[in-house]
Image (tube, rainbow, N blue to C red; front, side, top):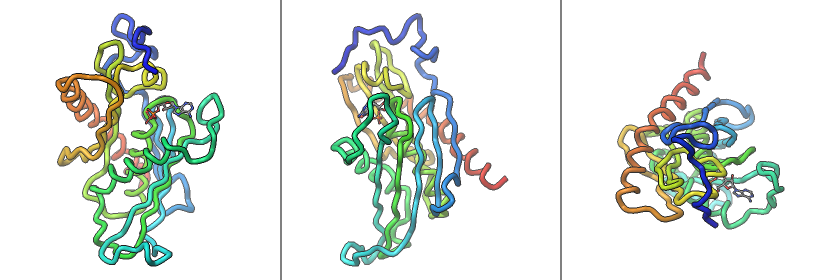
Length: 236
Ligand code: ADP
């Protein structure tokens, strides 16, 4: 339910003091789950995501294999304690949808033909949810894939845009997401600017969608920089 009457921006400042084009404090680390082939931790404000990657590994049963390429299996999950009201642990419609779009957002960055008959398994767990969890999860998956040494065309950068109190903003927190006019998560490959995820919930004009894409591509440079730093820190 959208409640657009609530004041989310007062004198140009958002609830947490940010300006419209500010991203929350970001923290990113790779190699946080030693058992996995690659792993990462990503935090945007209070939204925290872990990703673990296993593979490329042989896929069984064999009838699921693709003879000429690897397949990706992606599992997005929100921990029951990630929100104040216990979230039911069973996979729901939302988790299935986010797993599907996350996989689609990641796939264009990988050279799947190099690993026939295998699977690359990506597990994303949201430990604390405060808005924009799917984009946090995609950033974590991008880092975990790189950490696993899987050849990639590019990292995958993800950031949400949207509209609150008739103002275009980026990186919506939970309250903003709930009360927004629109919520627009975006993922892209930073070198080619190929957009691999674009979803929209709410009402905006075509021009506002274009502006939001521009805003996210611009501010996404900060996310890209943070991802690269996290990967470099791994080898310090
Ligand atoms: P995203 O997290 O990618 O923005 P949604 O728009 O579906 O995806 O969710 C927005 C926010 O709503 C989440 O980040 C989370 O803070 C909150 N939320 C989602 N599902 C639940 C739930 N089952 N219980 C409480 N809060 C939830």
